[in-house]
Length: 427
Image (tube, rainbow, N blue to C red):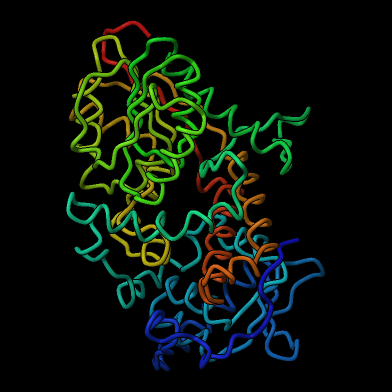
């Protein structure tokens, strides 16, 4: 069962300077009426119960069905009517609605999302869909600011819900007889090491390997590679991650083998036997995928290997959402886009000598990783608050973690470990 912040957050408690679009409720009566009709249709088709204040059902459903509990129905409908799914997310941040089991509700909504809006009403999207703002495109000038908005929030914040390896990407758990991942908090560090080791094996990293890591995180992959006898250069745009990763590397006695630089991937130099990058391509942005892969190609030594871990989505859904400003882009990961495996293959083939040689997906493992993070985050709400993060922020992150988990549970999202090699070179 998902634990959520169930208190109704008074709108006057929202800091309008920090959260202007959460504090402001738009006034769009016609669009709100359309949103109300759409809500009823979606709830009936997806088997959801929609409750009004006091527990009265707006839409009934069988016992055990996911519940959308509206605290401020009018505010909810006006927000959704004005800005669609962005309004849906802002409405949760504001406390207009809750769910006893947030993941179950979002999983129901994330199943076949292209069918949420009827075909005949798709024109309504033009009323609220925005393009991503130019100021958030991940150009060389903007990229560091985009990274800061997420990864420089606070190392202490991430330490509250990540395991001691400080690894912020999908783990790989043991699987049971049914093929499902067997995930538990106590085994998460081991599962993170299993993921890292598989990626390093894919890139054939061993004693003497020259390794470039694009996207440092907090240094765990660099430490594992250095422990194999490799020499690692790791690039990050996060000053918070830079400081902690350097400290962890020094504490482990690996400073002679692992170096962390504050550097954009486009400025990478040198020649490397292996290039590895974990869940960084999602932040690159579609216009810059050619630059990203050209960098991999440029720095890779003859016979070298590129091993990427990437969150992916189906190609048709990626194309449909590639020019859409979403709640995740607005509040969580500005400037990015989740690619498809096909897009990765096509971009590499068109712009580089690299070719996709292997792809290994394990999306259910990410769902379990996110569950563990989400439970830890909600259990430590008071400690998050003590770091200076208000209730709007905490609700934002609860929704982000639950929304992501639901995406992997439905298969709308996947995570892949990908091997790229040069055409004609031995794998």
